Length: 187
Image 1 (spheres, rainbow, N blue to C red):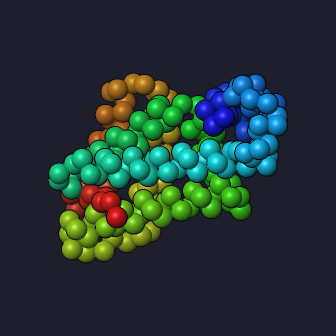
Image 2 (cartoon, rainbow, N blue to C red):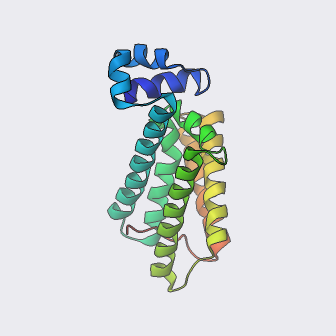
């Protein structure tokens, strides 16, 4: 059901999608749908939670595969830049809906941001022996997110644009922290 829901939400957007659309896309009955979910909102929140968990796990895996602090951050930025492509149109719908303060999805997004800030800070501490300013880290993550969305919207699938964005993100990180790019680490 989640895959069918992701397809229809990605194609129609959250507001324009009905439970009936999800039933058709997932090939399930209304009865089956309501056995697992209370509403369209409940299903969308489950989809957002699954996407968040996969994203954080992907970041942890990227860090685990790298050896140097710079390589760790580079792998994380690569994942960040490729996430919109790999997830597809649902990515932008999740971004929009999770940016609305006061919603359950907004609260979940804040948890994901806090996890990324903690990973970044831990990597920075291991690299430099100092604590990073959490507001600077929050700003960096916001800047990285905007760059990733720009590439997704303006140059989808363009490898040169992805590599240019990754270099810009590395430069921003180094400039903001006054150090070679710090590495997020797994907790």
